[in-house]
Image (cartoon, rainbow, N blue to C red; front, side, top):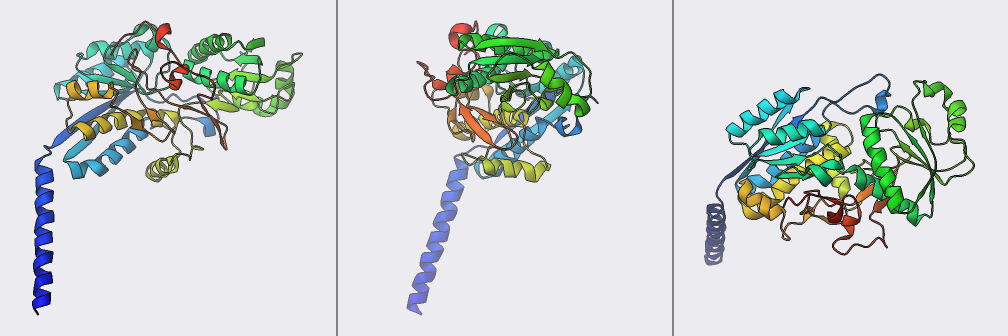
Length: 395
């Protein structure tokens, strides 16, 4: 009896101690509510693109939603709550009006998946104390000359993707490229980055051709593309077709039996469903369970934007931009984001430093930067617009 009584007293004491510690820990943490808003254009659809290559309607939005779910999973134990508003509209003025309304409601964190003029207009429409994350626009000018205030870029730039491909070509000693490209605005922007990169890495374009046909290649690819890619010699076919109008038919249909790289074949982008290393399979599974489709590069860019906010708020236990932004841009901020390295933001233009996976439809082939491509500050800065190439001095 005496022994049982002693055990009872000890258990009672431990229970009271644990309860006291729990109450004490919560008393140290004030409730923090973080509201975020995503502004986006509807996903463009065209009958010329095969259904299996079409973008999902919630492309990008789903990544932000997953990150909010993840943040609230731990936030509920820390007295933190995260919410996301989403506005999809095809007019910039309507999105700006929504953003201003959200700002008046107290919202200060904005994610945007917009073209460059619309992104500039949104930034001008919002006061400087609003923090903007660009989660979809790859325009190099945003990182080089336009320099929007209090704007961070989690989407890869065209130059980051191009540099990753060029480093791979250098490592594999594939120095001569047959360049094939489309005519869309995105094609032209990526093409400009590709040409700068080839020159920077001393790689040669042996021939270049524009694809400006409306042929249905599903029936004629094996006859037309070998003739289209005819040349004396080349090491790779480098294709730029952001709209998926013809590039998917190039592999195995070139004049010479050479690898196809670029927007098709071996690709460089921010994310892909084949990535399972560095515990990424956990992220892939959580996403697929929620949305019944694979995670895209746009989804990842939106996810990592929300994760950046979440990481800062978790460490600081404060949700105001005036406290969060300086921390994100400081040496203390290092984000674990399933890419094999801690991620940080470049202080001159707000671009997220990150590795760039290279992959085909079935496997992760490599991850840039490659060994041997050194940089005096950070090897990740060998990808994209470096400080010396940028007019931006934002942070």
